[in-house]
Image (cartoon, rainbow, N blue to C red; front, top):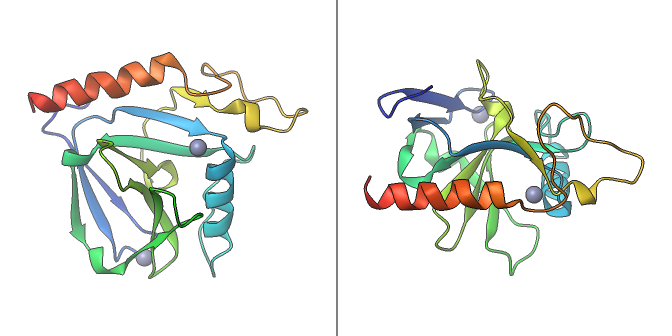
Length: 169
Ligand SMILES: [Zn+2]
Ligand SMILES: [Zn+2]
């Protein structure tokens, strides 16, 4: 179990962008929703982009509290990918090598999902699969962890608990 003093580094595939994460993540999950599928597809279509999706089409994220993330190097190389101009969700890519790094929300949400493929050594274990109702009818997600058709209460509770913890740092 990681403590608040542990640091994890996440970098783009060429190493020009480095982020430092402090402590343990809030949650590590795979999302199958239509916008994650589309967002990952768009990123993978960029020249020489490293793959983002799991073999079954899901995208794995490791979410951290916003205040536990430091942009250590190459922040100026980051670009936003927006699927819909009205959306508050931006997918952030390192323009040096088109690696997907994280999702950013233009609202009060206190967490940042980072693309799990960027946790090269020892990525946090996946805890749940969500929005599986977007999978084609003939595709069954792996049953190694709990799967949910939408956003489960278990996830909402984890996010709420981390928001409360943030008030006390
Ligand atoms: Zn890079
Ligand atoms: Zn999603």
